[in-house]
Image: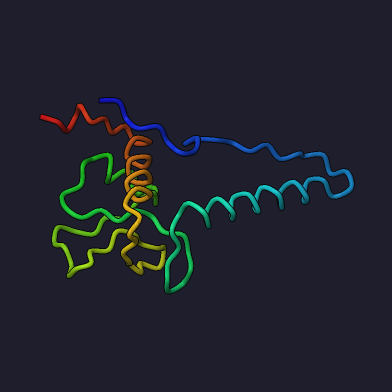
Length: 126
């Protein structure tokens, strides 16, 4: 079964004009930051405590790709034991954890992080 398409390009790049004419570099950088902020606010859930962007929180024994993604800061490992209901599914850089009902966003972000580090469903179906 093929992996579902990502809602955004995984390794996209943004070109910034390096020509310092009339503040064009600063204006372009501001536009890039504004686009990232809009994307982050619309797609990635933010922490209800500190409002930082969250990463998917994964419980259980992690696959090697999950360990790599966690080391890169693309997901968080929650350990082997599930906490009380509702089980949190997001974590911010300050390690606040929360549950967000939008499981589709969590699944998409988790799968994107795993695929970026070599995960294939074929490896884990056996």
